[in-house]
Image 1 (cartoon, rainbow, N blue to C red):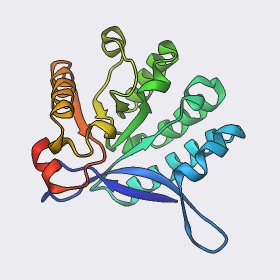
Image 2 (image 1 turned 180 degrees about the vertical axis):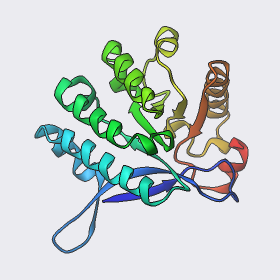
Image 3 (image 1 turned 90 degrees about the horizontal axis):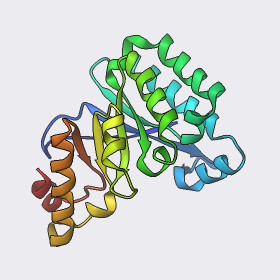
Length: 204
């Protein structure tokens, strides 16, 4: 099932955009967070199924709730596998009516390992109206060439630079640099791991 993490532009604004986070329940009904099962799914070659299930749940939610937008994470394993990538795109094609409210996220480190499949996949999802985000930006090694090659809508700044940013001059400088970079490329930015009002107000 999905847990929904709000994405807001101000601390007091109505929430209309969420990131979808995969969750499971154990036999006792307790919640199992993603870090406890996704590595196992990757090791067993089952992460494609998780990607597809999250997409199915997200598009169903978007159909039921026309007033919200959602972000979903996608693994590099699905993008680089032609069969699973086509299955993913087929589901988007069948649900094209909600794609303009859906953002697909790939992590920076995964995507930049092989840029060509990423470029093709991003072009395909954007044909359906989806938006595209780079997750954990700043934690990898994106080049200016790759940023220009991809049709990126949103850069999500890695939370390690955001948590406690109001008390770190170095992180403030780094975040400002990433923000200016994104703005110059015509991209929006999202700051991850914002967990207190002091950081939120500084970022605003």
